[in-house]
Length: 425
Image 1 (cartoon, rainbow, N blue to C red):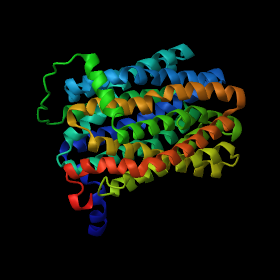
Image 2 (image 1 turned 180 degrees about the vertical axis):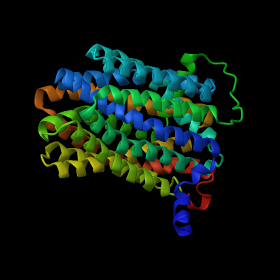
Image 3 (image 1 turned 45 degrees about the vertical axis):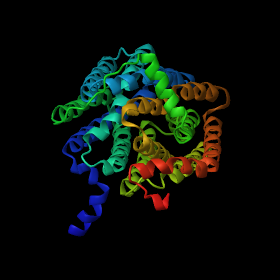
Image 4 (image 1 turned 90 degrees about the vertical axis):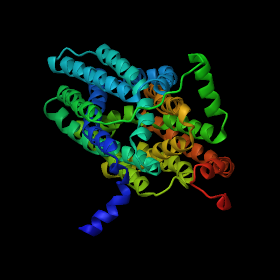
């Protein structure tokens, strides 16, 4: 028993911080509800419209605020109390889910209700996501555990992706989508309770003499003027635009191609969760940020290969295995990119950089959703996903070619913060 505990301790070392434990526990509960809502929403949209285009439109409406608002959200996060911001966003998200539940359970829900509430959720996410990313360093007592905390966040996110869709598939088949939305709304209580229970030291917020536009330009110049940050954000944007829209097309594969039901959709998304959970545990077990560049280079190729084979599969077990690879490759890229960016960023620009990270990932996604939905209407979902997968593989090759130069540029920062000694640099 002691041997098992000693093996787990390095993987769970960020949980030594009380505030992070509260954050982690609240997320673990709430994210199950979030994934249930995601699955219930795409199933409900496809059930109401039987259209890939409408799936793309709803996906677009839920994420477009992240593209338009996230940069301003980053400024808010750098200037205001992140703890209070998160309490506010979680309460608003709870209201959104409960409104969705009320409409679905009463049987009056229509596609425009879903679009309107998706837009509202997108506005919340545009501020919540950079705040959440920038808040983690505040609640980690030992800064060397930051990479572990980010990997654990990914693990709990994807552990929820394993559990939430499976439960959602069963509930949709038996009692309908409304119950999924209701459970999601109630699950936010755990997050808010965890945030309220935290004991935080006041964070020094520097007095700002520049206006909003100057700070916005400063954030963009900082991020895109440094090649390693620029390369990571651009690869993430490609991955988000070409690869991530698989999430809105999966109902088509579950229902039409694999001849399944809502349970099949739940199993496919759960397979993604298993792969991502394995990837998250692997990253949690790493003791250093050194070497993550190589993982970022390889991950889109793993993701893209899984997507290409999945798009052509007509066998459930093969489709499930490819979804495992998609989840594994996806989380390696997303979490590794986050960890490197959080490690090298100057603290007074953390919120703005995390808003650009959100913009590159969640902000680009609506355009990918809309383009993929429209393309799938013309050439079919399988060929649409195959094209996206090949583009991710090409992105992986391009980043790999740049990697030696990017390493040379990033090494002085690692030396300055003590991750490398001068002799090894």
